[in-house]
Every structure is written in C-alpha cells, then in structure tokens.
Image: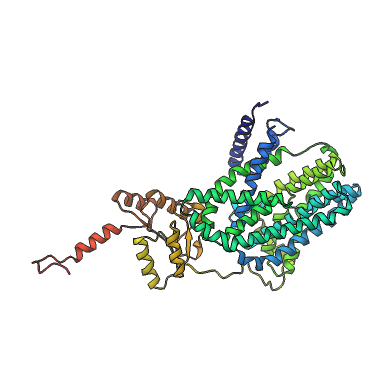
Length: 548
C-alpha cells in the first residue's frame, strides 16, 4: 500500500502513537498497545510494513541499548550475591518448564519432535520486555529485579546453546554438534576476558577524557553498546549478551547514571520498532485448530513458571514477596520462542500449525504477564497470605539487596566556589555529602579526598530518581540556573521527597519564581547574603556607633 520504506515506517510509528494514546486514556500498558500496532501493520492485517530489514535494524539497535542500560546498572560487587540464586533459578526454571511442558504437549496429542519444540519454546522468557517493564516501574534496583535480570541472562545463555545445537544438527550433522558448541564456548571465554580487561584498565581513564564533552560521551556509549553487540553476534553468541556486557564495563565508573539518564528516551523510541517487529511477525495460521492447546499451554506458562521460581527461591531462604515478584517475570514466552519456532519450521522439524500455536501462546502470555507485572504489588497484597508455603519459617534473605550502602545526609549539586564552601562546612559538622557535578576534574579531586561523587546535573530526572533520596535529609543546588532548579524541585516532589530542598538564585526575579514554585523551598542568595552581611558588619570611619 505504501510505496517507500520511509512512508511505511512513518505510518507504523504514527499508528503506534495513536494506539498508545488510546491505551494511555484507558490506562492500559503501552507494550500491549505497541504489540497491537505491530499486528495491525503486519501481513495478517493492513500489510503496511514491507520494509522488514529497516525495522529489524532499528529494533536490533533498540534492544542493544536496552541491554546496555541493564548492564550499566549492574554493580559488579553484587555478582557474588546474585550469582547463586540467578543460576539456580534460571536453570531450575528451564529444566522444570521443558520437562513438564514436554509431557503436557504429549498429552495434548502432539508428536515427540513437536512436543520438544513446544516445550523448549515455553521455557524462555523475554528479557527485553521484562527489563522494560521493571525499568518503567523503577524496580530494576530492587532485590527481585536484580534476581530476575540474573536468571533471564542465564536463560539467554541457554537459548544460545539450544539455537546452536539445532542449527548444527540441521546443517552439519550430529558429529559436528559438540565441536560447534566448544568453538562458541572458547570464543565466549575470550570475549569475556577482553571485557574484563576493558572494564579494569581501559574504560575508566578513557571516560575521564570523553566526559569533557557531553555529546561525545553519549555518542561513545551508543557506539560501544552496538559495537559490543555486533562483536558478540559475530562470535556466535547473542548480540544481547554483548550489549549487556558492554554496559557492565562502564557500570563501575562514575558516569553510569548520567549515561543511563541520557539514553532512556532513545531506548524507548527504538524499542518501539522491536514491538512492531514482534507484532508484525506473528503467524496466526491454523489458529482455529489450536485454541484449546494454546489455552492449556498459556495457563501452564502463566502459573507454572512463577511457581517453580517461588519454590526455588523459597528453598534458598528468600521471602515469598521476593519470590512472587521475581516469579512473575517468567510468566510469558520470549521473542526467542518465535525465532525457535521459525527455525524448526525452516529445518522441516515442525509444520506451520506448531508455529501458529507458539505464536498464539506468545501473544497471550506476553499480554497477560504485562498486566501481572504492572499490578504485582496489589496482587501480592491480595494473595500474599496464601503464599506462605513458599517461604521458610525463618527466611535468611530480606526484601532489599544485601550490600553495604553508604548513608548520605545531603546531596549537593555543584561544587564550585559556593558549593565547595557549603561542602566544607557540612563535612566539618560530620555530614556525609554526595556531590553531583559535571566537571570530571573536580569529581576526581573530591574522590581522592574520599567524598562520594556522581557525574551529572540538574536537568536529568532519571539521574535524580536514582539518588538515595529515602536516606537523604537535604538536597542543595548551588547552581544558579532557573530552569534546572525548577526541574529539580518538580522531580523531587513527584518522587515524593519530603526532605529539605535548597536552590540558588542570583537575581531577584529568579528568587521569586523559585520561592513560588513549591512551599517550603529555601532560596539561597549568596551575593545578596554576602552584601548584607558586609554592610551589617562594616565599620564606618569616624562613626563610633558603626558595627564591627
């Protein structure tokens, strides 16, 4: 219908925006709206999008940036804490789902080969969709979010092995399967070793230089994410794994929050193409004959997968709430499941009806799990008392991440002459101050003195949201920037911050606007205050009544 690729992409984006607007009014998840838009522009409905290569490329870039941002938030010190539960839960859920799913498929009348493909397709959950949902809910930093990301990465590694095995069997024969897997494993070890070297010795000093230019830092981050993803893919690994590890290399630097904050919008725009790609690629052939199997298998994924996660995490000492929240993240099948089905069809192992069945299960479980995750808290409030069987009598893990967290009394934006003076006086009173600044040299000097620092500025709501506001008594801005200070006040109040807020103004008009923006905000006037103090303390020659 639409002749040029550009027109097709424009039409798809505008349709997605329109459906997203309707979803927003109806208070429905945008992910479901985007998937619906993908189905509408696909070959089964309007048939608008024929520029599949272009959409796939944009989707690929969006997914790379998403996984890069996930890696960027991963504190390497937490790997020891999250590693065991992530590995146990990931492998346990994969084993349980594949074995039980196989027998369910056999019970529904499918053949052995078909049952194997169905079972494996039910095993994998969508890292991309789950991370997007947890990020939107600001739960990636919570304990269940960390654990979920961990076992989703384990799943991704397993699916890589499965895809390599199937491809090797279908193209090279059984005698080459072991060799193919060993080759990819060796490449993976080499790639991981290179990542460790970059993270330890290359990236920190390199970013210190790049951070002098904000535009260059963002460009470098995007380029590094895509380059690592492409390298990983070229080695036979998943591009998602490469992008994730690229983020990990920068996670230990002082620039991760600013990079993350500045890539959020780009991530969301490009991920739209991922959902359009998934929706437009869904196959609904022979759906009528598979309604009952689709319902049975969907219920198994929606109920069975969370249960096995809760069982494993409960046995490891985690509380039922943590197990429930993490368990909901595996209550859907992945885009890899659709790729797996397409691969099986191309190899002649399954027919189009099995591809259609897996597609319907994917669409239904993705849609339902989106609602479950978005409303996980009220759902747990309703049924939490019924889940006590999934918790030890004396749980050994709490609801927060087990790590030493530095208590911050004051967050100070800007460490120039005025900010530096405030920092010195606060430090003398024993206050722990976190300094946020855009000058790498200033931050480097402060870090040498043992002062906690963060690279960033006022106009980054995502960065402000990442601050330890729950433990902070005051937020001070020494930057006399009216727009930035107004954004800071608005963001803090939107986040429910109830501590002291102080902002700086050099002009009377700015001071009036800031004072009127929010009740209780303190406006600092360094020039006016200094002038007043000087006049009050000034000694006038020849005047015995003048103040000293």
